[in-house]
Length: 247
Image 1: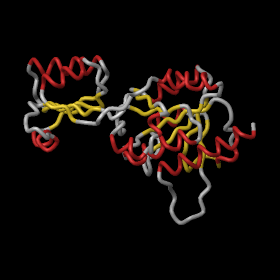
Image 2: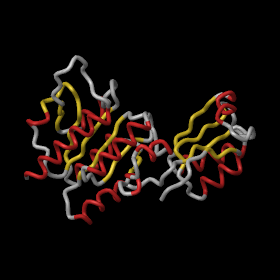
Image 3: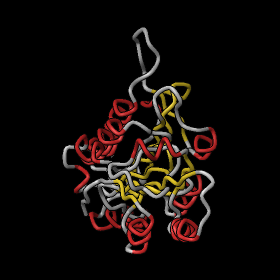
């Protein structure tokens, strides 16, 4: 379901949005504010595992479009998030081995949108992103996905490492993109698979990397040593597609 990405301002408006189940990516709360309504907002946010950022008044003033934020602003998502189970069901409904993208530390909305577009085109059943240190489903992500968000479910999880462990119990194994790994052509990338992509430069975090079964590198012959995250995702994803077609 598509939503209009927006910032909800004011204590009562934010409380109503949270209680109505509106998809909120982040809450920005004035640092040090602890009165009754703010405590209620924090409680509702924790119930829904929503990230809270404590910021100075200047930051809230800059974000505010009404000038009446009352010490709290909620950033809503442009699209509704799926559950991980929705992604697995998508694969079951198609009678296919699950093929899932897991994205670690992707903070650029253009990268996320491009990866979701690639995921759709290569037949992946869904995309999983973390709640922390990552961009959510913003309007920019939706535009960059070129409509793919209407067809490719995106789940947001608290702990990517734990999610990998849970998906392994469902039969998936995981390949991580890293330039120190074995060349991707030397790996068997068929069967139920999760493709783990990290941010350009920073890469996949150590804890997530350690959960992966294989580390795959993309052969490069140029003068620089890294690809844009969305390009790397596309290259590896289509090697998976190639191998699945041959299997």
